[in-house]
Amino acid sequence: MLDIVFITLISIIAFIPLLCLIVFIHEYGHFQVARWCGVKVDVFSIGFGKTLWSRVDKHGTVWKVSALPLGGYVKFFGDANAASMPDNAIKDEKPQTGEEQDGEQVEGEEKPVTTQFPHPGSEEMAATMTEEERKVCFHFKPVWQRALVVAAGPVANFILAFVILYFLIWAYATKPEPAVILDVMPDMPAAEAGFEPGDTVLRVNGRDVPSARDFQIEVMMASGAPITVDVLRDGQEVELTVIPKRTEIEDEFGNVSRAGRIGVRLAPESAGEAYGPISAAPAALNEVRKGISRTLKFFGRLLTGREDPRELGGPITMTKMAGQMVTSGFDAEIQNVTFGQRLEISLARWIGLAAMISLSIGFLNLLPVPVLDGGHLMYYAYEAIVGKPLNPKIQEAGFRVGIAILGTLMVFVFVNDILKLF
Image 1: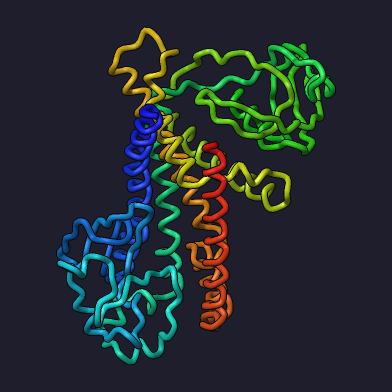
Image 2 (image 1 turned 90 degrees about the horizontal axis):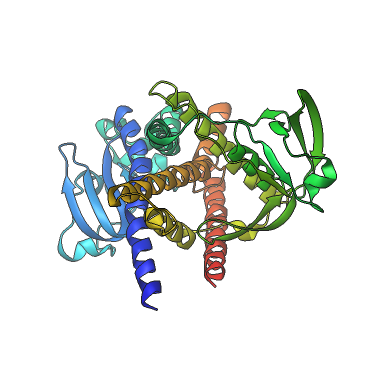
């Protein structure tokens, strides 16, 4: 029992700073591009609920950390409803103290309303603002500037992932070598397809597969669907078609998932040439590209019923993974290393997890679902093409549908997380 409590505590401690970093970078992307576009930023918050710390910078922006670190927001000038919040209240917003910090709505003040919600009445808002106020209000900026501000959050997540992967590849990775088949298991798809020991994997579905890990991922994400594998055998290229079989796979931490397997054992990868500071950049960029592509492929398979929705994970799964990464260097199977080296292994894996989660969050926010950044970009694309914004009532209905979709998804992944624990 004490072991479970200790592991849970370690996992939470490992996950909270990881999530705060990713959220901060995402929101800072919105914030910085908004500043470049001349938008006044009222609040920059990490977390929700009761304010734990706050300060006001020279531009009048309230920076704060709140009690629930499960997200964050940037509140631009004009994001509050003009009909219920006079322009003076917007313009003169100050850091809250005392009971106002509890996050409860007080007289003359509305809870933060960010660009995640459409403004119900820009004409009414314009009537309450001066010309100078309209110049710094997000809602009156050209559509291309609003689109840049919204897209900046996911782009910042991709940049964070790239920077992390760049330094990890430079510090630890070696250039990959193609996957070589060591053994073929009988009565498995690979044996039926004609794979042989000694085959070197070149391509999957026409795409180059530079490493054993890439080949494994391609197979895992193709259960039930035929894939074409080009292998090099005795100096000749041979084309094979195989259908990966969905089976249970257990990773080094004991996590069980269901994914595609074809029944081959790959030769261990030997240490190749190390990356330098120049060659690490395109390698990191390629990893970002592959991460986005694989996430897109997973959701495509999910929507078409070819992927198991039980593989979706939420905050509990990510918390568990953060704990596993941060303690991975202290596994008893890792021998002949110093304490400092164990700490370095754990830190590198923990930071690597941050890159993968940042990629996922950036991708998810670009989905064309109202409430998400991608939904805003969809509305802005309509406005740019038609020359006027989408009807506010249609926008509002879209956001209600978006909230329902996200709410349903959150409940589903939370239930998935609970079931995985048991």
